[in-house]
Length: 122
Image (cartoon, rainbow, N blue to C red; front, side, top):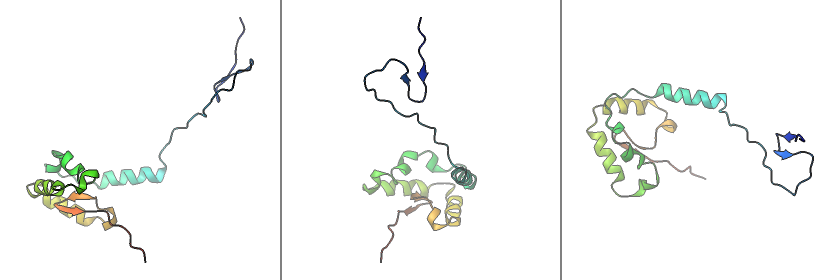
């Protein structure tokens, strides 16, 4: 029995010539860089502990304020209504105000609508 050798890098058989085959290079796993990981861990550590926050029960309402549905009538109003009755509103508001303006989340947070602003050219 003849033994065949394989080239692992290209997944082609060695020896007997074959018709033109399509081979793909092996993909390498993308590993987050240290700064990206540090940013992620920093964001997690900086997240407030908002016990009893109403937004946790209504994720779909708040997700709609940042997605494609953001332009639909009533999307912001529903989220603001949830915020107004939230027991964690004061803590949430203090957390948002403590963030740099560029780091504040988009959508409705602490009963306020925040949209992405386009940079002005001039």
